[in-house]
Image (cartoon, rainbow, N blue to C red):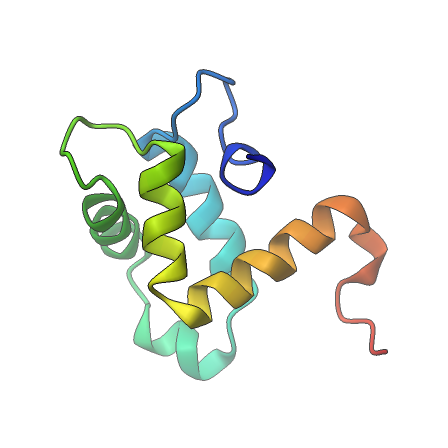
Length: 97
């Protein structure tokens, strides 16, 4: 599925911690100042997200694990949707409808 595997930089079918760090950094840049303050330590946020998504603890996040974790968190799903939209239309960031 495109959603999860657009973050799979090496195309191996799984999201690694390194790949997730890139996603977290991109999402962090989309957060409001208030949310950024709550998530000041991106490394901790990344590790926490990785552990939560890696349900079977094999060190990789499968497509199913990714989707299950994202759908369980509405705010995260919304931010990822915005990130995906920017992949298709990079000029849309900050544009209002």
